[in-house]
Image (cartoon, rainbow, N blue to C red; front, side, top):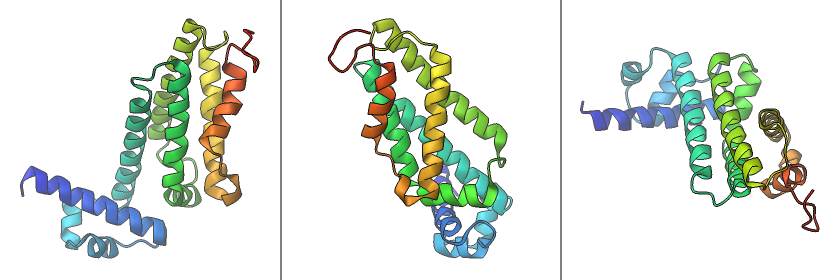
Length: 197
């Protein structure tokens, strides 16, 4: 098997597993069903993954990496710190909405302790990205003076709470524009009339 077909096979397995896990739940999902959906043999799955748990962990890891890449790219080339933070919020919320069923499955079946070390690293990376944006905004005068570290913690904590609410309740959907307004009211260095604070 060449490297390209190996990557394609792995991707097929991950996509099929995501569908099966989301539809059936982790406990009810069977490797046999994942193989059938991917159009490959059961043995082929075991060439890439030791067991169902490893497959599930890889999906979660891939989703975290994908989200981290998307948020990092969303702030690159932004004309201002305000735009960078707005882009970050839009991508973060949008990604969570796109993968709502999988997030709900993960919360429902595994709670908050599953893969804790990886979660901590992911959230630390995201917090540092927000902190970097805030430092730039304070330096340029866009944002009022504040502790960038503590404010980044507040923003990320709020995002995590919003995403949890959205995963559990359809009425809790928060649009990025609403979040922008809420966060920027406290951050921007000008009031609504355009006067510096």
